[in-house]
Length: 331
Image (cartoon, rainbow, N blue to C red):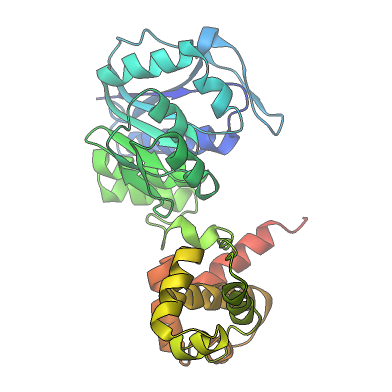
């Protein structure tokens, strides 16, 4: 059985949000045909309101077919994100099509800020969803009925709706859907051909910029924050930090948490993690040396902290950041 995949296009879409899943589904079809299963696979169509060409921020332009009748049964709807997502969700023709078509589709997939379109159409009310890490807070503010989790690569938000994180995460989700439909062997074949992980290690937090924490209003707490940031490897016990703030440990913990929004111990751990991330990216020092310098004490303590906060080990984080850095180099 050939499964219909309709990808929604609009002006300002992120090219990889639509091209990535398109290639995964199309490659799966080729892999199945190679096994003599030509009746299986996916019929993938890029569509847009009135069949307009789909332009991207980077200047690429895609030919699109008109949106199908929203009451036509569709296997999978893909809603990509991009800088044009806000304008698209302000267009009743787009939102109404999503809302009606979703009722007749087996599943709906959003990629990156495509989650805003899914939420605008009411598909995520009462659900957990993810989006690009840089847009997660804005989405949570705009759609309080949606529990936004900025870390997962993708989430099954409901029985029929999936949401993927930023940009390339749409590829991860598409691979997972191929695996659900046709098994691990076919999905692994697609992943090998496209030179991808079948299951990427960790979440998208490992790619996110360090989270900026608010400055306390009270001068003693601000001074403690600055001290921690300047000396992440220093002695930052509650008693020592409270002494610097001229407060009792109990009172200091309460005031710090109220002012900063995070307990002192968690704040210290966050600052140490960010410092270690930078050193893993910028130096060739061993994990053991970095762990000691940043206040973790041992490499194992640092490893447990990274796995808990970022979903990957320090070694894996260093490899990931090196790959990203090399990808940015001119040819």
